[in-house]
Length: 269
Image (cartoon, rainbow, N blue to C red; front, top):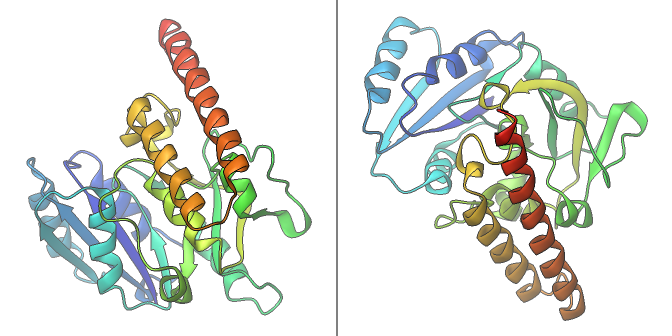
């Protein structure tokens, strides 16, 4: 079984698209359990989902309601209830293409590959340096690659239960760059890859920084990156000289993103 974990906050206008994208998977829907965690929404998200559950009784959907605690706490609430041998993440404002899970499971269930964690491309996004697409149209995700660039958006991810067992959960208190924080932990004990196929529509196809979702807050995202950097230093996965280098590198990336964001806004993008 595949447990699909969906954190939801004020998503009344988009959550049905996310759920329909699960329903329309070419992979057998009877092998899904869908866990939606309503993170204290103040709009009609809860009512929209409750109506959808009543109208789609053939689907195995659970709705969990909790006080607002942030996306990490919401994901963790779902992960702790998940019963599946595989875990798939889906944000409430994203959509899977119909063949998404079927394509990824063909790799995860194959004896030919030793993959524990598999991502894919999202619309309008290429796999960039230092990631390199190789044999079988896969790119390796390593600790070093993640420290340079995070190419893995949560809704693209599916992983084996062993990842929860050896890496734990998201940081409950981290709201920004929380996905990278978790991927870095996962990279220590698991084989991670990206499938070079476009299988997800994220944020209605908007650009990743400065526009939609949590990543729109560039200042808080930068604080999240710096928190992650301090943690890998404390865990002795990098030394102090590397820490200084990464610190300066992240600061430079932040300045570039600020400038690029302003430029694109002036162009109406």
